[in-house]
Image 1 (tube, rainbow, N blue to C red):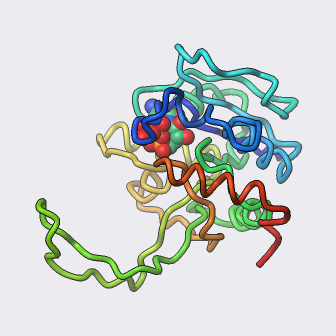
Image 2: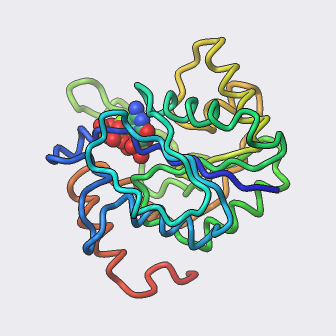
Length: 233
Ligand code: CTP
Ligand code: MG
């Protein structure tokens, strides 16, 4: 069956504070967006892509898209609105049982091995799933002034990364349910959870960072410039 990739790339990158949205910042001669799409294509050469872009995007170039089957979809106000638009664009195109993976354009350092393992797990996971890593640091709950209120046990705490996904039917049902019940969505897994499903956490590499702040860009640049940085650990 067909694998569909949805890449939300309609954000403004406010926390990065750069002149360009962060997906267009340069890493080793190519924009972040080109790196992310190249990695997805290397893992899933036969997948079809739906790329969410802001209607006013003046920086995008189709030369960065390596997929044969791809379309541009208008971004929405929030990330979840962008993904909703992409799911709507697949209506009548995707089959119910087709797998859909959603991957942030801001995560160019996703390892090919993790992408392939996630796909394999999702083939048999009715509640969908996501790449994730167990929390390593001690966690503190703080008050508004930045004083510790208490220590939160990290037992059972994970960092949720992307890709995240499920079959087309399950993901559409989850997003429709979230819309009807006005649940705020930060990721696909939260939509699946709101439907009562238990998405599967697939342990992935911790260096699948989401470029958010300036120091993340230099970290990603160092990783992607290093030969074989994503060789299996
Ligand atoms: N995104 C999107 N549509 C939006 C908002 C975000 O497609 N309306 C995408 C971003 O392009 C990014 C991903 O969702 O790939 C994760 O969002 P985030 O890291 O928050 O990116 P930005 O919203 O661009 O950054 P910021 O929140 O700092 O402005
Ligand atoms: Mg954002």
